[in-house]
Amino acid sequence: MNYQDTLNWMFNQLPMYQTQGATAYRKDITNTVLLSNHLGNPEVQLKCIHVAGTNGKGSTSHLLASVLMEAGYKVGLYTSPHLKDYRERITINGEPISEAYVCRFIAENKSFFETHNLSFFEMSVGLAFDYFVQEQTDINIIEVGMGGRLDATNIITPLISVITNIGLDHTQFLGDTLEAIAFEKAGIIKTNVPVVIGEYLPQTKPVFVLKANETNSEIYFAADLVQEDYPCGLLGDYQFYNKKTVIQTLRVLQGKQLLTVSEEHIKSGFLKVIDNTNLQGRWQQLGTHPKIICDTAHNAHGLAIVLNQLKKEAYHQLHIVLGVVNDKKLDDILTLFPKNAKYYFCKPDIPRGLEASVLREKAMLFGLKGEIYDSVSAAYDNSRKNAAANDFIYVGGSTFVVAEIL
Picture 1 (tube, rainbow, N blue to C red):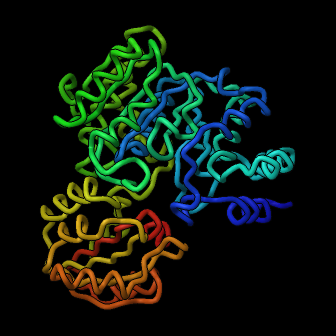
Picture 2: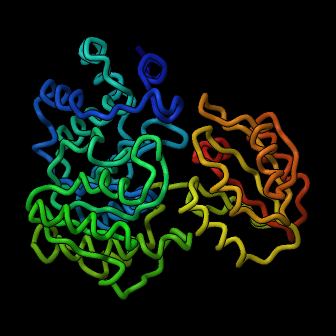
Picture 3: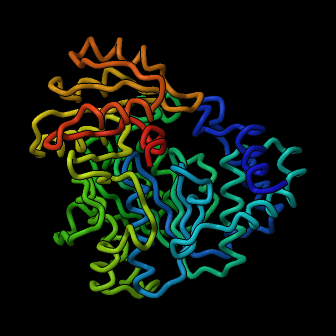
């Protein structure tokens, strides 16, 4: 199979949460353990930083990778989902895994995948670990897919665990209280491995402390410990706490002499994060007259910060291109959006996408008015046609909406 054939097989034959949602979620790491054994347990040969959290884990992972690249390390980075190309998920020093490697890995292990009915995500985790071992990386940043305790990435024993924050998202899988979600995320805390918590709430801090006590893990609350706020190539207000989380994580590793990283490496890594890692979709500016911003924030916790940042912008008229997936609690999200904007409702082009007509009907209950478009690109094109030079266009609501306009 060529690369496209290989991707089609991966995407279509096996469950993929990115497109299918609930039916693709597997609350069990048994298959990942089987795959690891089949591959010769590559994860035990890797030095890793494990990153979980409701929001910010992608930005935090990319910031960590960028700083460590500046410090001279060969850095593997595993993240999800991808925006444009599957290979974004698996990179070394900002370079995506080759198409040939993906094809070869799938071809060599296809019968095993089929016999054990491995999910798309489980295969991807195995591929990343195998690739990082073959390429002899110095350090690897591994982002959790969902939750933590039962996530396929949780077969690693990292140098340090990182939990960015806790919000209400994926409640159908992780629980519908902050405490329940914190428990799932805390599942990445390993025996005698330190853990850094980015942001915490009164409901979540005790969960983390209890787990850290059980595992004899030193616990650090970055929001309380880090005073510095260095400039960054990522401009979203929500990066404020992500940067603190990264700084604290690196200071712990430096203090334990597990890595050598200076403050200058941190400063340059923050500024060069986009150049170093090619991260997209985080308060990313796509135009100037009118100003166009896209952002992948997709739950109440993330959107509250982004929409608050939107209030600080100066413009004549606000245009919002909005699409969501069908498993979001719309009441929690739509109440955050401004009523004085013109809305362009659309459906992301994946099976999980919520029909634009359903979204508009619900949005109207919150005083949000606009038109329905039959695609994200049509919605985006019309917003640009309608916007004057001193207007502002925001594109978001879902990672998959942003992916279609980049």
